[in-house]
Length: 243
Image (cartoon, rainbow, N blue to C red; front, side, top):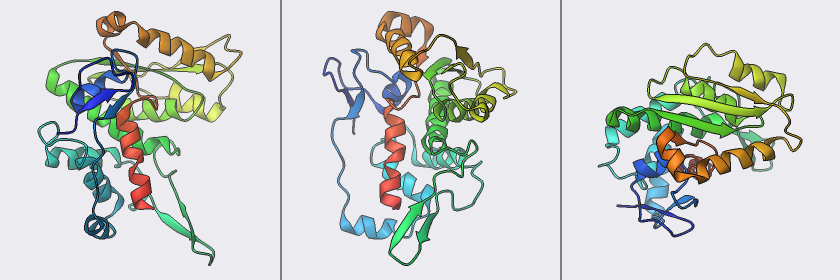
């Protein structure tokens, strides 16, 4: 079984579910797998005929032990996370002219951002783990545009999650602000923060300090869905196989 270790090396290895729910490791590091699975040429040839969701299942299965998420449940989580994409193909690869150049379109999700691709699965998976544990979690994240709307939308109606996207007031587009502030969801709490001369960098400092206090993080049951969460990185690796 692949387990997850901190980039700072100060904690014992964790299972996938614990790494995802914690976001940051207890020593302040980031979670990474303790080994990288290999993919054979035969597997790549088989994967060539898979659609995006089938391919995601194949790639993620290499990193997520079936004792943590049974394969049938993994399939259901992936289908749910891509349900609101506007086209059946989910992530089309479009030829550009006749020069053997292609474009991968990552903007067909509900908030029209590539962040929807990984965020949907991450939130679905967190909700899945939390429901099994009968726990509730507060997601605190800093955003300058794309991450906040994607996290907020994916969190709507989740009974185990409160989502707190923090954004620098007046420093994101009006469309992105509305994507967060007009959601009719009791568990989504967007916060416009004043006096951020450095924009999102100021908020990143606040969030980092918040998570640096492991006792407070545990007491308030906090986690993050910013790009530091290994689950987001994992889902985004599927892009490269799909290409």
